[in-house]
Amino acid sequence: MESKADVVIVGAGINGCALAYELARRGKKVVVVEKNYIAYGATGRCGAGIRQQWATKENALLAKRSVEIFEGLSDELGYDIGLRQGGYLIAIHDEEGMRQAKKNVEMQKSIGLPVRIISQEEIKEIAPILNPEGMEAIAATFCPTDGHANPFKTTYAYAMAAEKLGAKIYKFTEVKDIKVKNGRVEKVVTSKGEIETKYVVNSAGAWSKKIAKMVGIEMPNKPIRKEALVTEPFKRIFDCMVISFKHGIYFSQQDEGQILGGIPSPEEKIGYYTQPTFSFLKHMAYMLGKYAPPLKHVSILRQWTGFYDVTPDALPILGETSIEGFIQCNGFSGHGFMIAPMTARLLAQLICGEKLEMPIDRLSMERFKGEITEERAVVG
Amino acid sequence: MKIVCRCEDITEEDIINAIEEYGCTTLAELKQLLRLGMGHCQGRTCLILAAKILARKTGKSLEEILPSFRPPAVSVEIGLIGGENGE
Image (cartoon, rainbow over all chains, first blue to last red; front, side):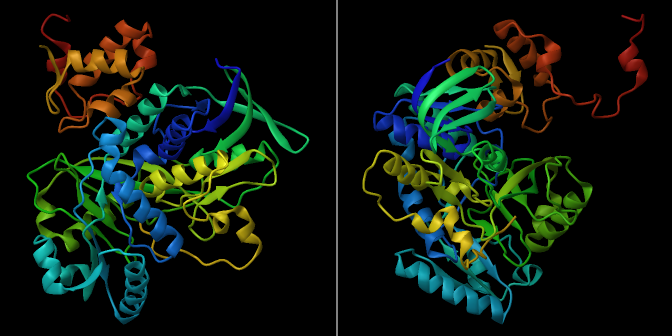
């Protein structure tokens, strides 16, 4: 194992791997330490969606800049990430929802997103399998440049590109401790040896809280168990991701033709419980039938669980901390995949002392000391 | 060309390539990279074949490699499993 590095990244999910690439590209000596395998956690269990329609400007901007990077990523990394931009259709259910949607759309348009409010008829034009009555939708918002990419392929693409540039990724290697000297990180103790380093990045997803504790930092993140399912594949019948903030549902038809989706489980609770539940399956199947009646005839192949690493305001925790060299890259609250390209770029700029393309001060942990603005546009 | 996963059209060559080129040492990684076992039969045919290839290439034992599922996942007659002569 490498005994010295400029940066040790804890966790080989999408954010850890993307950051490894961005740092390696800037000439840094990077080591990624992963307890399991690449994309074992939330990345490999996520809904694969890429959405720019957020309620807070921070998320919308991170997502928009990320989509710009996603669009050229297969070429940049030399590996097809399976990007498809079929849009996100977000159901609006009532007057209150319409008020919030109008507010969101106004902000989203101000940063240049091609989003618009569409009628029930347009919902059916965009995705004929949808039933606005069953969805209880009076309208929807639609952004055609939203979409999805393959989370496995995207993470591997970043990981392999990082390795080509000299980064080392150690799988099945656990971080046991992080040593701090005079208020600055000194070395990382792993199950396979010690690494001296100037920076440690905490991108351990739902396990970030444990990593932060090693340097004495208490984090407000909570692991929230989520469930998803996938059906048998069939001919493409719609292109967009369909979601609802009220019902918490999301689903789309993936590249291979399968329907992938999730909804909050009626038995949802905080903790590391990983068993899939029948109540989720029943609830999701019922709601899919209401949203898109033809899907009643499709078989479910598989269900699984994963964790959202949720912060009090559902915004990520990024950047520097009270321990010099200890950098946060977690708390993605269910949307870490879609904002990873820009997040990684910004953190690489921070670590390398470059000028940041957009400020991230408001995303540091300091914000929890004051009043917080919660991101409400969350599903799953 | 030897087909290992019929649902997802994956060959022995694909698997060996994933092990040698991308450093896969687990079924989970093969699944992520190749969609092995993610098709209609959910790995009932291919997982054991892929596990044997993994065992051969990595030196791990089958017990270490195979997931902790409980076969059979579909009902099957005792006579069919037991065979005619206890073979």
